[in-house]
Length: 384
Image (cartoon, rainbow, N blue to C red; front, side, top):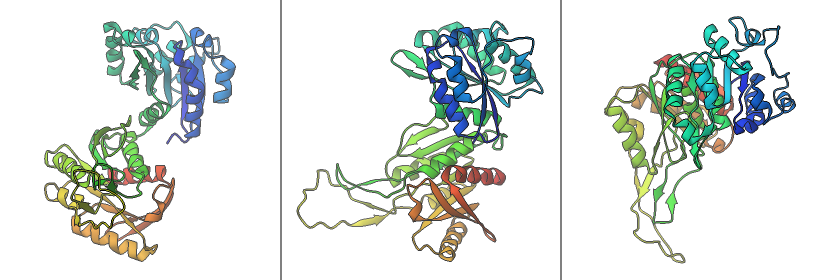
């Protein structure tokens, strides 16, 4: 996600500076090169040696005659993006007023003047974050094109966002805007059909591929809605659903209202449902369940909208020809842009092998689900 990206990392005097070692490691794990700049206050919280170890580069602790701010963040500087994490209320206010009294604020002024993408992850006590002047400063800096990574409000504190959220926002800042704000709805993971208050019918889908697609669409400029039975994520609006019916209704409502520009149907939606018992079914006796087919989500969406749809098709045959045939049947029936076909044995794994099936072509992909998400997003962007 950040392969080949040069990240200048500004560190200020929030106690959240203790997180910078893990953040730098995470950025590097995703392929970035990192060089850090610190304020005097930050050095009282995390030693420059620790930051140097985490980034594998010397740390800028003062601006000298070598004009480090220009070398890093100037028009022909090293950085592809300037990330300030954590950023204090003090630092945000100074950036809004173009005050340069630390290596970090001087780099910020230089980056903004040079048009270097800038991302800020604030961290402070909640009353400071709610101060009208701080909120006004954030609004002002955002109006200049700076992206803010919203903090987590917990225990009376505006805690710094997760490493994952920050890395994702950095990736969005340096990636081409392929979607131009189009809204992409992504379904992900398994659905569950209640048998009784404690038992469900479900499947082995982990949702990794769907979440990877949603993240990649966001990174490439889309507004994303993730429809799944799972946690909130920093890169999408989440619509929580449990059953196949709930997922279908959620997506159809958005499609019929014109709130979606495209759909990626990556969820492993239950094919059957069952009448739910009001009380727990007692064990120790033979039991038969009457299964009723659930409506096909993509067919339900196609009945109300002609928006571009990407389908996924999982098979268990292990035979490419059979997978391609099934995918082409699905693509033709619902007029899909393309279908991503795979063997169901990869459910839950981080690696996958898929076939991108179009009307007259098939292309193989083998690798991580994260990179698969990027490829799906790129091909969908071409469709739009």
